[in-house]
Image (cartoon, rainbow, N blue to C red; front, top):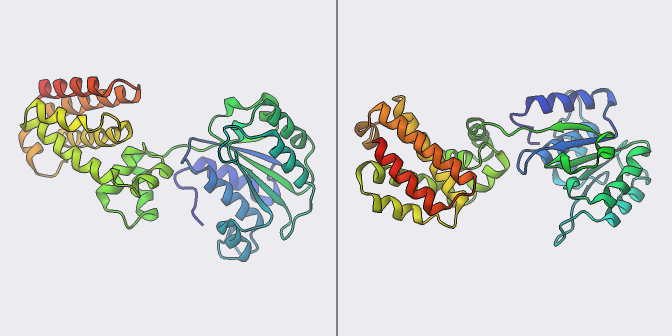
Length: 314
């Protein structure tokens, strides 16, 4: 079973809550998509249903393996139906009725509610009824990206656990374990492009974008340092409709200039051509372009500004 990587605070809180059967009847796991909410929920389910010897969850007993496969009858996943934008109140009422049925195999039943913050007021009020008086042996694991969308009455009856996004370096180390088949430069590009978010980085590793981003970052750096403005602008124009890909590529380019500034870049064209001060200024210019990309600025405009700023720096 995959552990909750690089979230020591959340892992410690969950272990403390699970130890000795002290798990509250409702947990709120909050974090952006890809931050590990499902991994955390699965860990809790395994931890509570595990029948192995020694440290729990053992990951090898029958209940642990069933949870990992999504086949344990006492772990129920509820989510927004396909094609819907909100979690319907009818689904909450079904879940409420189901919660009064005794467990099949374990000592408790666990309800993993994906997209709890997608519930409208009616659905949350329906959920509130069972959170106020839950049946014995039932726990709810509410997954959300933004607790501000939840009613105060719901928040007062749950224990919140926030999942933090790791750094890109931590994400890259996680990918060594989770995506060993990917090339090192692909893992690095995915980690940077995802901003450290392990779930998103795993999606990127499976696409062609990281490899393309790495190649384009190298080509753009050489165009900016040795070529003319036209070549750099032409390369950047290929990202006019791909803001995510542009962000990945610029992250890699900024890193390349930053390494050159501190003398850690591999020997090559850029490190031979630039002084540390020039490389640092170029890295700063790329950083400003990244900020503009994150603010939804026009890609042609930020590209033009980037080229002029780097050219002025070198």
